[in-house]
Length: 77
Image (cartoon, rainbow, N blue to C red; front, side, top):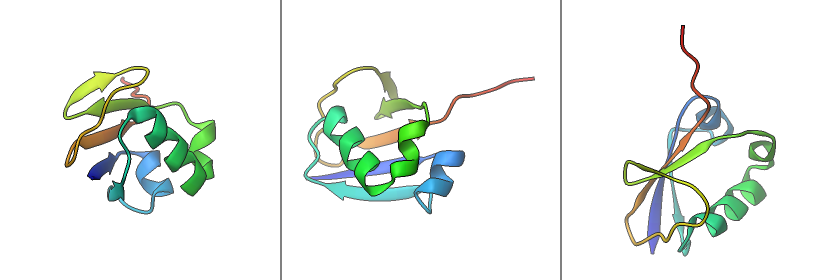
């Protein structure tokens, strides 16, 4: 099972690119743990998670080829 991760803003810099793929991740909690282990700089950041274009909070189930966006806080002017 492969999940596509799309990173934006500062998160993209931490992941060294705007898009990566991870295998064997079936929910957003596992995804967060995996990302924090691979990229410890993420631990200090707050960011929103969207699955297939829908914001999620808490634990969400992930399926093969889902697209998960990591969205840093937005600021406007």
